[in-house]
Length: 255
Ligand code: ADP
Ligand code: MG
Image (cartoon, rainbow, N blue to C red; front, side, top):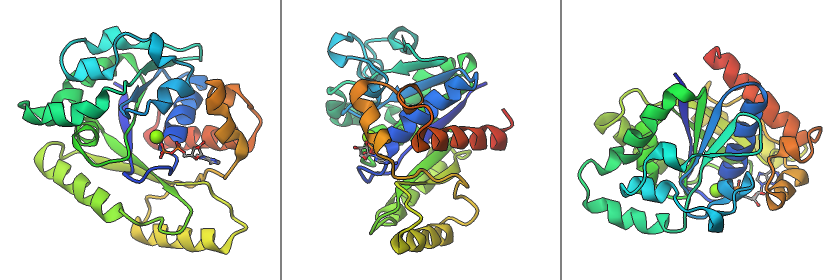
């Protein structure tokens, strides 16, 4: 049975999408059948793996509003062992549309649970908010991966995120756990980075991944080619880092 990992932090620009795309692709290259679920209306994960959203008929939006079934919206990418459920700009409206539905927190869960048996890993790229869409991801996830940018105010907003996690655990998903906290855009030469690392480790004892993702320009270039870093510049520092992160997660999960 596949493991479902939500990649979330309501702060924008911290590396959620970069991590979703490249960690998913890295898992695929290691023989793990992987599904990436893009639930951010901006759709950067979808375009990051080469999906042209204008050419896609049905997306996660149609699944959430009950007009399509999840297996029917899966796209096989050109990358090894990597499938994606793309997002749609309409998803922004879903925040409002879902509010009136019964069981509105578990719609994504009902859609994704039957897919578990077909994958080793399912990663969910969350939007930069703590609304109903992110709540849906936390309700179905086994674990949460939190990217944190090694910058000023790195810890800002994390208490709201952790409050949301506690609420979801209490009400819907008592098993929800933290997979790990990922330091992104890491530059070990900077004093600031060292300070942030110390603070984050204090806030999340024993939860920070050993692997940190360096600030690397190739990681920011790959999306415009619609390719994960492993298929864009395989020997770059960013590719090696996501490869190492995938190994770390496989090792922790023993598979
Ligand atoms: P989020 O999904 O949290 O909003 P993104 O993954 O889209 O964040 O990253 C925000 C911006 O930073 C993007 O332009 C991305 O290319 C860039 N970026 C992300 N991680 C790195 C990194 N490790 N090194 C350099 N640029 C990065
Ligand atoms: Mg994003």
